Image 1 (cartoon, rainbow over the protein chains, first blue to last red):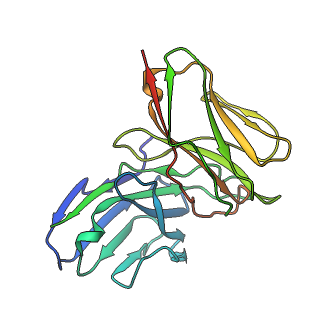
Image 2 (cartoon, each protein chain N blue to C red):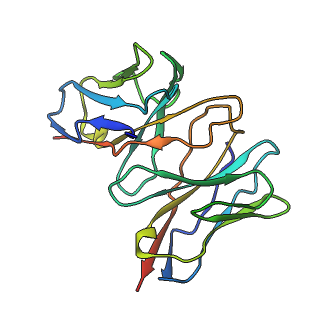
Length: 116
Length: 112
C-alpha cells in the first residue's frame, strides 16, 4: 500500500515569504507527527495530532509555525515570515494507535525547505 | 524521555555482524528502547523495540542488559544497504502515542 507522502519534495522561498507543506498519512492512521531535520542532526519533534486535534505542539519553535489537520487525515504545516534558519528537511510521520500498538511511526521522504 | 548516548560512527565489513551500542542509564521502568535507522535522503525507518527481554525480528536483534542501562542492536549479516544512521530512542510504552526524541545517532558504514 501507499506510504506517507509529502509535497512538495523541495521548496525554495525567499526570506519573509509564507510557505505550506503538505503531508498525506497512511490511510487509517490516527496519529500524525511533524519533525524537522537540520543538516547533520537527528529529526526534531514539532507537533503531533491525534485525529483532528493537536495533542502536543510543544516542539513548535515560535508562533510563525502552525499546523492543521482539519479532517483527521491530511495535514498542512504552515510557516509565516520565513527566515533563513527555517531551512531544513521537514518530515511527516503517521502511526496507528490502538491499546497496545504504537510500535512504529512511518515516515515520509520529507520536504526540503530552503529559505534564501 | 531518558537521554541516550551512541558512538558517532562505526564501520563494518559486509557479511559480518554489526553491533551498535547505546547507553540509556537514566531509563525509567516503564520506558521502552526503540531503534530507527535513516538511509541517506530518506525518512527514518523503524527497526525494533524492547522493554527488558531480548527481541529479534527479520531485520535485527536487540539485546538489553539486565539493569536496562544499555542495549545493543545487532545486524547479523550486514550488507551495503544497511549503511545508514542508526538512532537509539527511549520512549513510553506502545499504545501511548508520543514523540520520538532523536539524538545524533551512529553513522554505520558497511564496506566491501
